[in-house]
Amino acid sequence: MVYVCQPALRPGGASRHEGPETTAQILVLARFGLMLLEMALIRAHLVRGRHTVRDTFASIGMRAGNGATNIALAGATVAVFTWIYQFRVYDISMSSPWAWAAIVVLDDLAYYWFHRISHECRFWWAAHVNHHSSQEYNLSTAIRQPWTGVLVGTWAPWFVLLLIGFPPKMIFLQSGLNLLYQFWIHTEAIRRMAGGPAGSRPRCFTGTELVRSAG
Image (cartoon, rainbow, N blue to C red; front, side, top):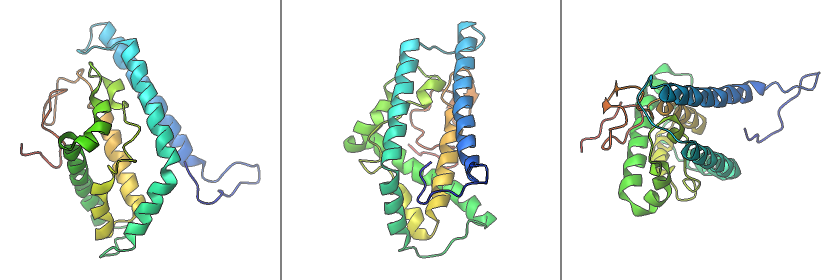
């Protein structure tokens, strides 16, 4: 978590804002727990799938590098989003249920274009191809993320949401929830899910299937 200002401290020295960090730690542990559980179930031949230790550690290493670059560039990312947001057409409140309903769909639409362009434009594909570099399809591949996505401008499709009037914080939060959902669909253990058999959706560019690819 990157703070613009130092969080206030409780009398005992603990921060009042330790909730988000605790949640992040729980999510990280949950991901690794699910990855280990899937490995155990695959080895016991209780679910379909394949995994190798080398491939899994490669995915973990790529996620660590992705996290490091995201943290290093967090300030620049927030600055760009904040600058674009000042040219918004409407003022959309984060307290509006309709705004959240709308951004769930619009965020998935932005993700659709990000993902489609990442497969069709060589410049973005050079960054995105790392996510598809594994020979396996299991939960560890979900964390196999590139190190250069922010540098090549893969956030661009979300700029439209800023111009409409969705606050940057709202966009970051919904995008995070979208990615969190995508973690569990990177597996062959679940034989069928939205969009077709698990692990065999090459033409699907969306994150949650709310927006479907026509081709």
